[in-house]
Length: 377
Image (cartoon, rainbow, N blue to C red; front, side, top):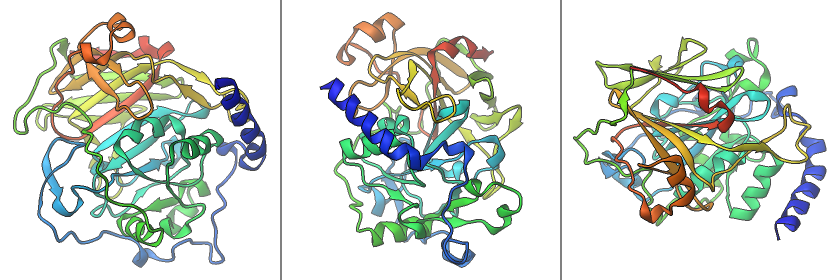
């Protein structure tokens, strides 16, 4: 069966790759006859919330979600992270942020929101990669993106994803005129609260879900846990020779602030520093999809089935722990234990670590860069 699947993927790749090309060597062609997809600034923006914010948010562990969205599917948006696209918009308001290396050593992000209605703009938006899809699949998400890789296409078909692809549904995206003279075209496209709401309605999306998977084993709201391995005022690591991870603890806020290339990261929507209560660094095995050599360095394929070492950083301290996931539909989870435990013990025999309520950042780092993780007291 695995050989058959591999053969099918190779055939699909040969057919589609000639039209996809190497993503980072070409501009995205999304222009309509006016050159701007969804018109003017009047066509995007926030959407008024008329419901009390008193429901449980399963992605932060907090009781602050608008009640009319308590049973809604989360919105996940594929966000550009190439250095030349910065600053991004909308990331200070996401509930979870995933960052993973893609082709050519660059990283990309997936921003997850329980409710996007108060987010003016998000992006810039880029194409979808399947290493993110497997992490968010257990939450029954709606994904917003511009295009795909051939292997993401295969994952969409195999796992019955239905996404908002702006290459097909162009009014889900808006092009920033002010960026056009300063940025490459692929770094100028954004989505927003109103554009997403409109797309879900026009595409007749199933918005409600009976999925109630929480992101983590959260502590009781209003309490704090302190990881026990040691203190952590700063944690850094390398995704690749050109992309690093860097979070620094602010004792005044109790949050970890994001940096990249020694520059503090912020949200261009509101000029707020990107900060998170929880930071996770997941060490995972990675290889390259056969036949993907046309992409710079090939398309990475991550192994989420075996588990391994991870670091949980929160409240000024860190826990060296292990992670497990299992099949496509099982959420990524974190446990006390050793690397041997990760490889030999089933989840039922492991103790899940308690996680503080609030926003979380998760990095997937290839195993050969495990030694680059550095934690300062």
